[in-house]
Length: 158
Image 1 (cartoon, one colour):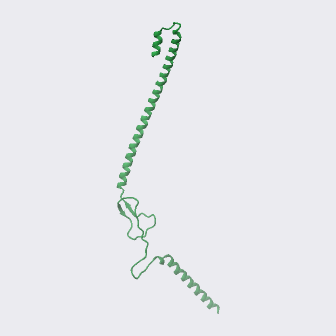
Image 2 (cartoon, helix red, strand yellow; image 1 turned 90 degrees about the vertical axis):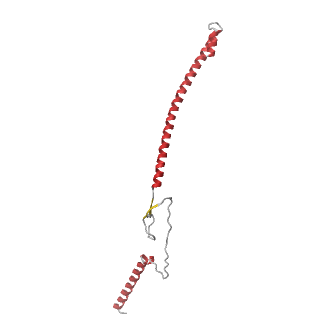
Image 3 (cartoon, one colour; image 1 turned 135 degrees about the vertical axis):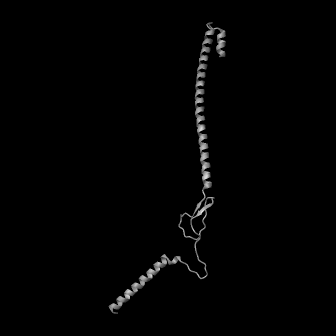
């Protein structure tokens, strides 16, 4: 085979290969997503969408059968019920905070009462010990006659 004919054949084969690759690339990127039908039935993927919240829809941001990406905002829900619930929760929180403050105040008051009572108990114990010592001394001094029986009886009664 002559060289010019061989060169033409190689050029033709290369161009035919490039054309086939370009057509395949076009089909891969665009054509495979297009569908045609003779009976008006098209295969498609439709996904049901629902909310985890119980609320009315305020606005729909997409059209029927519109292609959307994952995570795209589809609709806006009414938030009046949620705002009311948040206000109620804040009011309840303020109420509980006030109750906590009141309980802390009562705790501080009770702590001071406990401290005062403990001081009174200590004073009473000191008075008791003093009275027991006085009684012991009076009983010891009663036998020799240094303290009267009446004084011993008075100390025992105290």
